[in-house]
Amino acid sequence: MMVRKGYLRRCLFTSLLLAVMTAGCYSNTTGTSNSNQANSVKNNTIKEYKLVPNGAPELAGGPENKNRNTQPLTLEQLRKKYRSNFHFSGPSTPPRVALTFDDAPDQLFTPRVLDVLKEYKVKATFFVVGNRAQKHPDIIDRIVKEGHILGNHTYNHPNLAKVSNTVFQREVSDTQQTIKKLTGKTMRYLRPPYGNITEEQIKWLVSNKISIVNWNVDSLDWKGLNADQVVANVMGDVRAGSIVLQHSAGGEGEDLSGTVQALPRIIKQLRDQGIELVTVPELLQKPAYK
Ligand SMILES: [Zn+2]
Image (cartoon, rainbow, N blue to C red; front, side):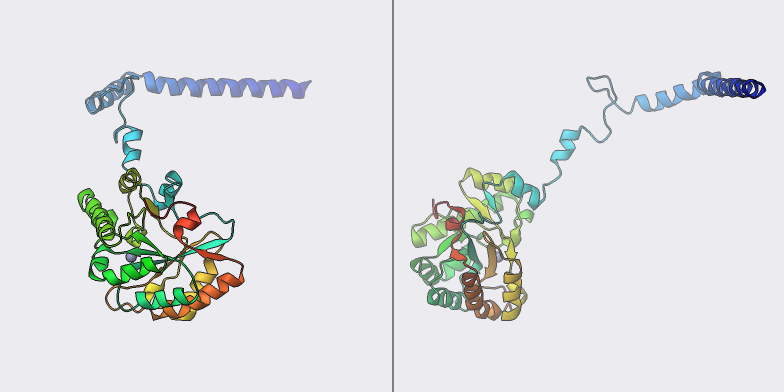
């Protein structure tokens, strides 16, 4: 009984203490001096913001939707958003792989790549640079005659993320016109140089019925790798449905002998795995030209 009385007394004391402390908290916010301070804070900042329709002060950095829209989407986000027009790979069944060659044509490596493809009866996709096509129309002719597909790789090979809309559209259109004049064909695939492209550019291409084709296997052949390294890079990442990036022409001083020598080995190894080698439109099951 005595124990219980002592316990009740301690509870009562604790409750009283809490009540005094809480009252102290309230007295701090309602006291005269603090009330003046609160008003002065209010007066200093009320002029800084306007009220939004819900009666709350506007967010200093602007509304959420305005700010979010100014953040460019990453390539991965763009791929998901425009999945029917922005391709990094194709379906995995049936087991097929598309070999693609960028930066053609030149008179040094492109003919050697074409020789290997002819020998092994492989059809591939060449993303050609407009000014190079203009310079070597005979090689463009050969690419088409031997059953390969032409894609647009811009006219001068700029980094599209860094050029104006006007320049971007001219880069694409000039290449379309050059190839149309040389071959009579209107290309429906574009590979952006360096794989870089903006959302606005994708929208313009889609509205002009051009799909964007990147890759999910990079041979890194532009680094001047030898054949063993090119084979290892491709075979290490490739799977059914892959789009493989290689080059059949380079920039100044770029040696693509490794790609040419690796090509027969890549073709044989993929075929040994039961993979059929096809063009990009065959892989995507879409028309080759417009
Ligand atoms: Zn390129």
